[in-house]
Image 1 (cartoon, rainbow over the protein chains, first blue to last red):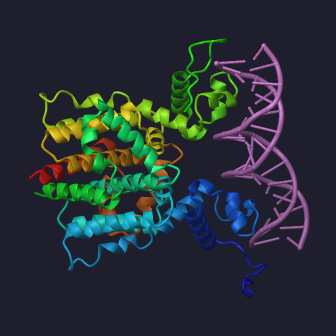
Image 2 (cartoon, rainbow over the protein chains, first blue to last red; image 1 turned 90 degrees about the vertical axis):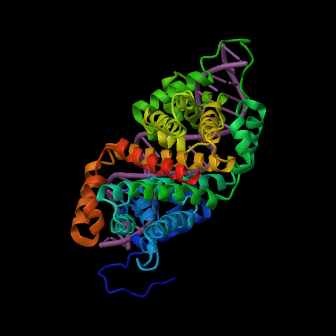
Length: 221
Length: 221
DNA sequence: ACCTGAACACCGTTCAAGT
DNA sequence: ACCTGAACACCGTTCAAGT
Protein backbone atom coordinates (compact mmCIF):
# COMPACT_ATOMS: atom_id res chain seq x y z
CA UNK A 1 0.00 0.00 0.00
CA UNK A 2 2.67 2.52 1.04
CA UNK A 3 4.40 3.88 -2.02
CA UNK A 4 8.16 4.31 -1.68
CA UNK A 5 9.27 7.90 -1.58
CA UNK A 6 9.46 9.38 -5.04
CA UNK A 7 12.02 11.81 -6.33
CA UNK A 8 9.30 14.40 -6.98
CA UNK A 9 9.09 17.65 -5.05
CA UNK A 10 6.54 17.82 -2.28
CA UNK A 11 4.21 15.00 -1.26
CA UNK A 12 3.87 12.11 -3.73
CA UNK A 13 0.46 12.22 -5.38
CA UNK A 14 -1.97 9.49 -4.37
CA UNK A 15 -3.87 10.14 -7.57
CA UNK A 16 -2.95 10.26 -11.23
CA UNK A 17 -4.79 9.92 -14.53
CA UNK A 18 -3.83 6.33 -15.32
CA UNK A 19 -4.69 4.94 -11.89
CA UNK A 20 -7.95 6.86 -11.86
CA UNK A 21 -9.01 5.54 -15.27
CA UNK A 22 -8.12 2.00 -14.25
CA UNK A 23 -10.09 2.21 -11.01
CA UNK A 24 -13.03 3.73 -12.88
CA UNK A 25 -13.02 0.84 -15.37
CA UNK A 26 -12.91 -1.67 -12.50
CA UNK A 27 -15.83 0.08 -10.83
CA UNK A 28 -17.69 0.11 -14.15
CA UNK A 29 -17.31 -3.64 -14.44
CA UNK A 30 -18.46 -4.21 -10.87
CA UNK A 31 -21.43 -1.88 -10.76
CA UNK A 32 -22.28 -0.51 -14.21
CA UNK A 33 -22.35 2.99 -15.65
CA UNK A 34 -25.31 4.26 -13.63
CA UNK A 35 -23.48 3.50 -10.39
CA UNK A 36 -20.22 5.10 -11.52
CA UNK A 37 -20.27 8.43 -9.70
CA UNK A 38 -17.40 10.74 -8.91
CA UNK A 39 -18.08 10.21 -5.21
CA UNK A 40 -18.01 6.42 -5.41
CA UNK A 41 -14.87 6.51 -7.55
CA UNK A 42 -13.25 8.85 -5.02
CA UNK A 43 -14.23 6.45 -2.21
CA UNK A 44 -12.59 3.56 -4.07
CA UNK A 45 -9.39 5.62 -4.25
CA UNK A 46 -9.58 6.77 -0.59
CA UNK A 47 -9.91 10.38 -1.52
CA UNK A 48 -12.55 13.12 -1.55
CA UNK A 49 -14.58 13.63 -4.73
CA UNK A 50 -13.22 17.11 -5.31
CA UNK A 51 -9.68 15.78 -5.60
CA UNK A 52 -10.54 14.02 -8.88
CA UNK A 53 -11.02 17.39 -10.54
CA UNK A 54 -7.29 18.04 -10.39
CA UNK A 55 -6.88 15.29 -13.02
CA UNK A 56 -10.11 15.50 -15.03
CA UNK A 57 -11.88 18.79 -15.61
CA UNK A 58 -15.28 17.06 -15.86
CA UNK A 59 -16.76 13.60 -15.50
CA UNK A 60 -17.20 13.62 -19.28
CA UNK A 61 -13.43 13.94 -19.68
CA UNK A 62 -12.93 10.94 -17.42
CA UNK A 63 -15.43 8.93 -19.47
CA UNK A 64 -13.61 9.91 -22.65
CA UNK A 65 -10.33 8.68 -21.18
CA UNK A 66 -12.06 5.42 -20.18
CA UNK A 67 -13.42 4.98 -23.73
CA UNK A 68 -10.00 5.58 -25.21
CA UNK A 69 -8.42 3.07 -22.84
CA UNK A 70 -11.05 0.44 -23.64
CA UNK A 71 -10.13 0.28 -27.33
CA UNK A 72 -6.40 -0.15 -26.78
CA UNK A 73 -4.92 -2.74 -29.11
CA UNK A 74 -7.90 -2.80 -31.46
CA UNK A 75 -5.95 -1.06 -34.24
CA UNK A 76 -3.50 -3.96 -34.37
CA UNK A 77 -6.23 -6.56 -34.94
CA UNK A 78 -6.09 -6.24 -38.73
CA UNK A 79 -2.99 -8.39 -38.77
CA UNK A 80 -0.31 -8.48 -41.48
CA UNK A 81 -1.48 -7.74 -45.03
CA UNK A 82 0.15 -10.93 -46.34
CA UNK A 83 -2.00 -13.24 -44.28
CA UNK A 84 -5.49 -12.30 -45.43
CA UNK A 85 -7.46 -10.26 -47.93
CA UNK A 86 -8.87 -6.82 -47.22
CA UNK A 87 -12.33 -8.01 -46.22
CA UNK A 88 -11.01 -10.43 -43.64
CA UNK A 89 -8.71 -7.75 -42.21
CA UNK A 90 -11.60 -5.28 -42.05
CA UNK A 91 -13.76 -7.92 -40.37
CA UNK A 92 -11.03 -8.55 -37.80
CA UNK A 93 -10.95 -4.85 -36.92
CA UNK A 94 -14.73 -4.69 -36.52
CA UNK A 95 -14.75 -7.84 -34.37
CA UNK A 96 -11.94 -6.47 -32.22
CA UNK A 97 -13.88 -3.25 -31.67
CA UNK A 98 -16.97 -5.18 -30.61
CA UNK A 99 -14.89 -7.41 -28.34
CA UNK A 100 -13.24 -4.38 -26.73
CA UNK A 101 -16.63 -2.81 -25.97
CA UNK A 102 -18.04 -6.11 -24.68
CA UNK A 103 -15.04 -6.52 -22.38
CA UNK A 104 -16.44 -3.87 -20.03
CA UNK A 105 -19.93 -3.66 -18.60
CA UNK A 106 -21.77 -0.86 -20.44
CA UNK A 107 -18.69 -0.48 -22.64
CA UNK A 108 -20.69 0.48 -25.74
CA UNK A 109 -22.68 3.06 -23.76
CA UNK A 110 -19.49 4.64 -22.50
CA UNK A 111 -17.93 4.62 -25.97
CA UNK A 112 -21.04 5.95 -27.74
CA UNK A 113 -21.34 8.75 -25.20
CA UNK A 114 -17.85 10.11 -25.77
CA UNK A 115 -15.70 11.46 -28.60
CA UNK A 116 -12.19 10.26 -28.10
CA UNK A 117 -9.46 11.64 -30.33
CA UNK A 118 -6.80 9.62 -28.55
CA UNK A 119 -4.27 7.34 -30.23
CA UNK A 120 -6.27 4.13 -29.76
CA UNK A 121 -9.38 5.54 -31.41
CA UNK A 122 -7.44 7.30 -34.16
CA UNK A 123 -5.28 4.21 -34.62
CA UNK A 124 -8.35 2.07 -35.22
CA UNK A 125 -9.68 4.56 -37.76
CA UNK A 126 -6.33 4.80 -39.49
CA UNK A 127 -5.99 1.04 -39.57
CA UNK A 128 -9.40 0.42 -41.12
CA UNK A 129 -9.13 3.18 -43.72
CA UNK A 130 -5.62 1.91 -44.47
CA UNK A 131 -6.84 -1.62 -45.16
CA UNK A 132 -9.43 -0.27 -47.57
CA UNK A 133 -7.19 2.23 -49.35
CA UNK A 134 -4.57 -0.44 -49.90
CA UNK A 135 -7.30 -2.65 -51.32
CA UNK A 136 -7.99 -0.06 -54.00
CA UNK A 137 -10.89 1.86 -52.53
CA UNK A 138 -10.87 5.62 -52.99
CA UNK A 139 -10.15 7.92 -50.07
CA UNK A 140 -13.81 8.94 -49.89
CA UNK A 141 -15.02 5.33 -50.02
CA UNK A 142 -12.60 4.32 -47.29
CA UNK A 143 -13.71 7.16 -45.02
CA UNK A 144 -17.41 6.43 -45.51
CA UNK A 145 -16.89 2.70 -45.05
CA UNK A 146 -15.14 3.45 -41.75
CA UNK A 147 -18.20 5.35 -40.55
CA UNK A 148 -20.56 2.61 -41.71
CA UNK A 149 -18.63 -0.19 -40.02
CA UNK A 150 -17.96 1.76 -36.82
CA UNK A 151 -21.55 3.03 -36.48
CA UNK A 152 -22.98 -0.42 -37.11
CA UNK A 153 -20.59 -2.01 -34.63
CA UNK A 154 -21.27 0.50 -31.87
CA UNK A 155 -25.04 0.44 -32.56
CA UNK A 156 -25.07 -3.35 -32.48
CA UNK A 157 -23.04 -3.63 -29.28
CA UNK A 158 -25.21 -1.00 -27.58
CA UNK A 159 -28.22 -3.21 -28.27
CA UNK A 160 -26.38 -6.35 -27.31
CA UNK A 161 -25.29 -5.05 -23.91
CA UNK A 162 -28.71 -3.55 -23.25
CA UNK A 163 -30.30 -6.92 -23.94
CA UNK A 164 -27.95 -8.60 -21.49
CA UNK A 165 -28.85 -6.31 -18.55
CA UNK A 166 -30.76 -8.26 -15.91
CA UNK A 167 -33.04 -5.29 -15.18
CA UNK A 168 -34.02 -5.22 -18.83
CA UNK A 169 -35.28 -8.62 -18.13
CA UNK A 170 -34.86 -10.17 -21.56
CA UNK A 171 -37.74 -12.45 -20.70
CA UNK A 172 -40.12 -9.53 -20.13
CA UNK A 173 -39.15 -7.95 -23.42
CA UNK A 174 -39.37 -11.24 -25.25
CA UNK A 175 -42.68 -11.91 -23.50
CA UNK A 176 -44.16 -8.61 -24.63
CA UNK A 177 -42.91 -9.20 -28.13
CA UNK A 178 -44.29 -12.71 -28.26
CA UNK A 179 -47.64 -11.58 -26.94
CA UNK A 180 -47.91 -8.66 -29.37
CA UNK A 181 -46.68 -10.63 -32.37
CA UNK A 182 -48.98 -13.59 -31.90
CA UNK A 183 -51.98 -11.32 -31.28
CA UNK A 184 -52.15 -10.94 -35.05
CA UNK A 185 -51.21 -7.31 -35.60
CA UNK A 186 -47.63 -8.10 -36.62
CA UNK A 187 -47.64 -11.17 -38.86
CA UNK A 188 -44.07 -10.73 -40.08
CA UNK A 189 -42.72 -10.35 -36.58
CA UNK A 190 -44.60 -13.49 -35.59
CA UNK A 191 -42.95 -15.41 -38.43
CA UNK A 192 -39.46 -14.18 -37.58
CA UNK A 193 -39.85 -14.44 -33.81
CA UNK A 194 -37.39 -17.31 -33.31
CA UNK A 195 -34.55 -15.33 -34.89
CA UNK A 196 -35.64 -12.00 -33.40
CA UNK A 197 -35.55 -13.37 -29.88
CA UNK A 198 -32.37 -15.36 -30.41
CA UNK A 199 -29.56 -14.41 -28.05
CA UNK A 200 -26.85 -15.48 -30.48
CA UNK A 201 -25.61 -11.92 -30.87
CA UNK A 202 -22.43 -13.02 -32.58
CA UNK A 203 -24.50 -14.45 -35.41
CA UNK A 204 -26.48 -11.21 -35.67
CA UNK A 205 -23.28 -9.21 -35.71
CA UNK A 206 -21.60 -11.40 -38.31
CA UNK A 207 -24.65 -11.17 -40.58
CA UNK A 208 -24.65 -7.37 -40.52
CA UNK A 209 -20.88 -7.20 -40.92
CA UNK A 210 -21.07 -9.52 -43.91
CA UNK A 211 -23.73 -7.31 -45.50
CA UNK A 212 -21.44 -4.30 -45.19
CA UNK A 213 -18.40 -6.11 -46.56
CA UNK A 214 -20.31 -7.75 -49.40
CA UNK A 215 -21.73 -4.32 -50.18
CA UNK A 216 -18.23 -2.90 -50.25
CA UNK A 217 -17.13 -5.62 -52.66
CA UNK A 218 -19.97 -4.59 -54.95
CA UNK A 219 -18.94 -0.93 -54.74
CA UNK A 220 -15.41 -1.70 -55.90
CA UNK A 221 -16.84 -3.63 -58.89
CA UNK B 1 -48.20 -0.07 -15.12
CA UNK B 2 -51.40 1.01 -13.34
CA UNK B 3 -52.88 3.76 -15.45
CA UNK B 4 -55.35 5.97 -13.58
CA UNK B 5 -57.85 5.30 -16.31
CA UNK B 6 -61.22 5.52 -14.61
CA UNK B 7 -63.21 8.13 -16.54
CA UNK B 8 -63.47 11.19 -14.36
CA UNK B 9 -64.85 10.66 -10.92
CA UNK B 10 -63.96 13.78 -8.96
CA UNK B 11 -61.78 16.58 -10.35
CA UNK B 12 -60.70 16.45 -14.00
CA UNK B 13 -57.02 15.62 -14.18
CA UNK B 14 -54.63 18.35 -15.25
CA UNK B 15 -52.18 15.68 -16.25
CA UNK B 16 -52.36 12.67 -18.50
CA UNK B 17 -49.88 10.48 -20.36
CA UNK B 18 -50.32 11.99 -23.82
CA UNK B 19 -50.03 15.61 -22.71
CA UNK B 20 -47.03 14.75 -20.55
CA UNK B 21 -45.20 13.02 -23.39
CA UNK B 22 -45.94 15.93 -25.73
CA UNK B 23 -44.67 18.52 -23.25
CA UNK B 24 -41.60 16.39 -22.61
CA UNK B 25 -40.84 16.24 -26.34
CA UNK B 26 -41.26 20.01 -26.61
CA UNK B 27 -38.90 20.52 -23.68
CA UNK B 28 -36.44 18.07 -25.27
CA UNK B 29 -36.39 20.15 -28.44
CA UNK B 30 -35.91 23.38 -26.54
CA UNK B 31 -33.27 22.33 -24.06
CA UNK B 32 -31.89 18.87 -24.89
CA UNK B 33 -31.87 15.60 -22.99
CA UNK B 34 -29.50 16.66 -20.22
CA UNK B 35 -31.86 19.50 -19.26
CA UNK B 36 -34.95 17.31 -19.31
CA UNK B 37 -35.57 16.66 -15.61
CA UNK B 38 -38.76 15.59 -13.92
CA UNK B 39 -38.78 18.87 -12.00
CA UNK B 40 -38.45 21.04 -15.08
CA UNK B 41 -41.08 19.01 -16.90
CA UNK B 42 -43.40 19.38 -13.91
CA UNK B 43 -42.76 23.14 -13.93
CA UNK B 44 -43.73 23.31 -17.61
CA UNK B 45 -47.00 21.59 -16.73
CA UNK B 46 -47.65 23.75 -13.62
CA UNK B 47 -47.50 20.83 -11.28
CA UNK B 48 -45.18 19.40 -8.65
CA UNK B 49 -42.61 16.80 -9.73
CA UNK B 50 -44.16 14.07 -7.65
CA UNK B 51 -47.42 14.31 -9.55
CA UNK B 52 -45.78 12.93 -12.69
CA UNK B 53 -45.31 9.59 -10.95
CA UNK B 54 -49.03 8.94 -11.08
CA UNK B 55 -48.65 8.55 -14.87
CA UNK B 56 -45.13 7.17 -15.27
CA UNK B 57 -43.62 4.86 -12.69
CA UNK B 58 -40.09 6.04 -13.53
CA UNK B 59 -38.36 8.61 -15.72
CA UNK B 60 -37.21 5.70 -17.86
CA UNK B 61 -40.85 4.82 -18.59
CA UNK B 62 -41.48 8.39 -19.70
CA UNK B 63 -38.43 8.28 -21.99
CA UNK B 64 -39.69 5.02 -23.49
CA UNK B 65 -43.06 6.62 -24.21
CA UNK B 66 -41.25 9.56 -25.82
CA UNK B 67 -39.18 7.22 -27.99
CA UNK B 68 -42.28 5.36 -29.08
CA UNK B 69 -44.06 8.60 -29.95
CA UNK B 70 -41.08 9.86 -31.97
CA UNK B 71 -41.23 7.00 -34.43
CA UNK B 72 -44.94 7.35 -35.19
CA UNK B 73 -45.68 6.96 -38.88
CA UNK B 74 -42.29 5.46 -39.75
CA UNK B 75 -43.83 2.04 -40.43
CA UNK B 76 -45.91 3.48 -43.26
CA UNK B 77 -42.89 4.92 -45.08
CA UNK B 78 -42.30 1.74 -47.10
CA UNK B 79 -45.13 2.74 -49.43
CA UNK B 80 -47.19 0.40 -51.62
CA UNK B 81 -45.43 -2.69 -52.93
CA UNK B 82 -46.44 -1.92 -56.50
CA UNK B 83 -44.52 1.34 -56.65
CA UNK B 84 -40.99 0.19 -55.92
CA UNK B 85 -38.78 -2.83 -55.42
CA UNK B 86 -37.86 -4.26 -52.05
CA UNK B 87 -34.58 -2.42 -51.71
CA UNK B 88 -36.14 0.97 -52.32
CA UNK B 89 -38.90 0.21 -49.84
CA UNK B 90 -36.37 -0.91 -47.24
CA UNK B 91 -34.34 2.25 -47.89
CA UNK B 92 -37.44 4.37 -47.39
CA UNK B 93 -38.05 2.77 -44.00
CA UNK B 94 -34.46 3.35 -42.89
CA UNK B 95 -34.56 6.97 -44.08
CA UNK B 96 -37.85 7.53 -42.27
CA UNK B 97 -36.38 6.16 -39.04
CA UNK B 98 -33.37 8.47 -39.31
CA UNK B 99 -35.65 11.42 -40.12
CA UNK B 100 -37.86 10.66 -37.12
CA UNK B 101 -34.86 10.60 -34.79
CA UNK B 102 -33.42 13.77 -36.32
CA UNK B 103 -36.76 15.53 -35.86
CA UNK B 104 -36.11 15.85 -32.12
CA UNK B 105 -33.02 17.17 -30.42
CA UNK B 106 -31.12 14.19 -28.97
CA UNK B 107 -33.72 11.96 -30.59
CA UNK B 108 -31.26 9.14 -31.28
CA UNK B 109 -29.95 9.27 -27.71
CA UNK B 110 -33.48 8.97 -26.35
CA UNK B 111 -34.29 6.13 -28.73
CA UNK B 112 -31.04 4.23 -28.14
CA UNK B 113 -31.53 4.52 -24.38
CA UNK B 114 -34.95 2.87 -24.34
CA UNK B 115 -36.62 -0.38 -25.38
CA UNK B 116 -40.03 0.42 -26.71
CA UNK B 117 -42.38 -2.43 -27.48
CA UNK B 118 -45.14 -0.04 -28.55
CA UNK B 119 -47.07 -0.20 -31.83
CA UNK B 120 -44.89 2.34 -33.65
CA UNK B 121 -41.66 0.48 -32.92
CA UNK B 122 -43.19 -2.94 -33.55
CA UNK B 123 -44.92 -1.57 -36.67
CA UNK B 124 -41.59 -0.44 -38.08
CA UNK B 125 -40.03 -3.82 -37.38
CA UNK B 126 -42.99 -5.65 -38.89
CA UNK B 127 -42.94 -3.42 -41.94
CA UNK B 128 -39.24 -3.92 -42.68
CA UNK B 129 -39.28 -7.66 -42.11
CA UNK B 130 -42.43 -7.81 -44.25
CA UNK B 131 -40.76 -6.05 -47.17
CA UNK B 132 -37.88 -8.52 -47.02
CA UNK B 133 -39.97 -11.67 -46.58
CA UNK B 134 -42.15 -10.71 -49.51
CA UNK B 135 -38.99 -10.19 -51.54
CA UNK B 136 -38.05 -13.79 -50.95
CA UNK B 137 -35.69 -13.58 -48.02
CA UNK B 138 -35.98 -16.25 -45.36
CA UNK B 139 -37.47 -15.46 -41.98
CA UNK B 140 -34.04 -15.59 -40.35
CA UNK B 141 -32.48 -13.35 -43.00
CA UNK B 142 -35.29 -10.82 -42.66
CA UNK B 143 -34.91 -10.69 -38.88
CA UNK B 144 -31.14 -10.27 -39.02
CA UNK B 145 -31.38 -7.66 -41.75
CA UNK B 146 -33.80 -5.72 -39.56
CA UNK B 147 -31.23 -5.67 -36.75
CA UNK B 148 -28.44 -4.66 -39.11
CA UNK B 149 -30.40 -1.78 -40.68
CA UNK B 150 -31.86 -0.55 -37.40
CA UNK B 151 -28.56 -0.73 -35.50
CA UNK B 152 -26.70 1.04 -38.29
CA UNK B 153 -29.37 3.74 -38.54
CA UNK B 154 -29.49 4.40 -34.80
CA UNK B 155 -25.68 4.25 -34.52
CA UNK B 156 -25.28 6.67 -37.42
CA UNK B 157 -27.86 9.14 -36.14
CA UNK B 158 -26.34 9.05 -32.65
CA UNK B 159 -23.05 10.17 -34.19
CA UNK B 160 -24.74 12.70 -36.43
CA UNK B 161 -26.60 14.43 -33.62
CA UNK B 162 -23.53 14.34 -31.37
CA UNK B 163 -21.52 16.05 -34.10
CA UNK B 164 -24.15 18.76 -34.41
CA UNK B 165 -24.07 19.69 -30.71
CA UNK B 166 -22.55 23.16 -30.27
CA UNK B 167 -20.74 22.12 -27.07
CA UNK B 168 -19.08 19.31 -29.01
CA UNK B 169 -17.66 22.08 -31.03
CA UNK B 170 -17.26 20.31 -34.36
CA UNK B 171 -14.41 22.66 -35.08
CA UNK B 172 -12.49 21.55 -31.97
CA UNK B 173 -12.90 17.90 -32.89
CA UNK B 174 -12.01 18.55 -36.51
CA UNK B 175 -9.07 20.64 -35.33
CA UNK B 176 -7.71 17.86 -33.12
CA UNK B 177 -8.18 15.37 -35.91
CA UNK B 178 -6.46 17.58 -38.45
CA UNK B 179 -3.56 18.23 -36.12
CA UNK B 180 -3.11 14.58 -35.22
CA UNK B 181 -3.53 13.32 -38.78
CA UNK B 182 -1.09 15.74 -40.36
CA UNK B 183 1.49 15.10 -37.63
CA UNK B 184 2.38 11.95 -39.54
CA UNK B 185 1.22 9.18 -37.22
CA UNK B 186 -2.00 8.54 -39.15
CA UNK B 187 -1.25 8.67 -42.88
CA UNK B 188 -4.54 7.10 -43.95
CA UNK B 189 -6.60 9.49 -41.85
CA UNK B 190 -4.66 12.37 -43.35
CA UNK B 191 -5.51 11.19 -46.86
CA UNK B 192 -9.20 10.76 -46.09
CA UNK B 193 -9.53 13.90 -43.98
CA UNK B 194 -11.76 15.83 -46.41
CA UNK B 195 -14.42 13.10 -46.35
CA UNK B 196 -13.96 12.31 -42.66
CA UNK B 197 -14.61 15.90 -41.67
CA UNK B 198 -17.44 16.41 -44.15
CA UNK B 199 -20.71 17.40 -42.56
CA UNK B 200 -22.79 15.89 -45.35
CA UNK B 201 -24.26 13.28 -43.05
CA UNK B 202 -26.92 12.32 -45.55
CA UNK B 203 -24.21 11.20 -47.95
CA UNK B 204 -22.53 9.18 -45.18
CA UNK B 205 -25.85 7.59 -44.26
CA UNK B 206 -26.77 6.76 -47.84
CA UNK B 207 -23.37 5.14 -48.41
CA UNK B 208 -23.74 2.85 -45.41
CA UNK B 209 -27.35 2.06 -46.25
CA UNK B 210 -26.33 1.17 -49.81
CA UNK B 211 -23.66 -1.18 -48.49
CA UNK B 212 -26.23 -3.01 -46.41
CA UNK B 213 -28.78 -3.27 -49.23
CA UNK B 214 -26.19 -4.29 -51.83
CA UNK B 215 -24.98 -6.86 -49.34
CA UNK B 216 -28.52 -8.13 -48.94
CA UNK B 217 -28.86 -8.45 -52.71
CA UNK B 218 -25.73 -10.59 -52.71
CA UNK B 219 -27.13 -12.80 -49.93
CA UNK B 220 -30.27 -13.53 -51.90
CA UNK B 221 -28.12 -14.65 -54.87
C1' DA C 1 1.59 20.69 -4.93
C1' DC C 2 -2.03 17.95 -3.49
C1' DC C 3 -5.93 17.06 -0.99
C1' DT C 4 -9.80 18.08 2.58
C1' DG C 5 -14.12 20.00 4.10
C1' DA C 6 -17.86 22.12 3.19
C1' DA C 7 -20.81 24.14 0.48
C1' DC C 8 -23.91 25.19 -3.89
C1' DA C 9 -27.36 24.01 -6.86
C1' DC C 10 -29.32 20.58 -8.25
C1' DC C 11 -31.32 15.34 -9.08
C1' DG C 12 -35.17 10.95 -9.05
C1' DT C 13 -38.41 9.17 -6.13
C1' DT C 14 -41.69 8.46 -2.16
C1' DC C 15 -45.64 9.37 0.55
C1' DA C 16 -48.63 11.37 4.20
C1' DA C 17 -51.78 14.86 3.91
C1' DG C 18 -54.97 17.93 1.80
C1' DT C 19 -58.97 18.91 -1.42
C1' DA D 1 -59.00 10.68 -7.55
C1' DC D 2 -55.51 13.86 -8.10
C1' DC D 3 -52.11 16.75 -6.56
C1' DT D 4 -49.16 19.30 -2.89
C1' DG D 5 -45.41 19.71 0.37
C1' DA D 6 -41.80 18.05 2.22
C1' DA D 7 -38.60 14.95 2.79
C1' DC D 8 -34.80 11.18 1.63
C1' DA D 9 -30.74 9.92 -0.38
C1' DC D 10 -28.23 11.16 -3.47
C1' DC D 11 -25.61 13.94 -7.69
C1' DG D 12 -21.44 17.05 -10.35
C1' DT D 13 -18.68 20.74 -9.38
C1' DT D 14 -16.20 24.59 -6.93
C1' DC D 15 -12.95 26.53 -3.83
C1' DA D 16 -10.94 28.43 0.46
C1' DA D 17 -8.13 26.38 3.66
C1' DG D 18 -4.91 23.12 5.43
C1' DT D 19 -0.45 20.36 5.16
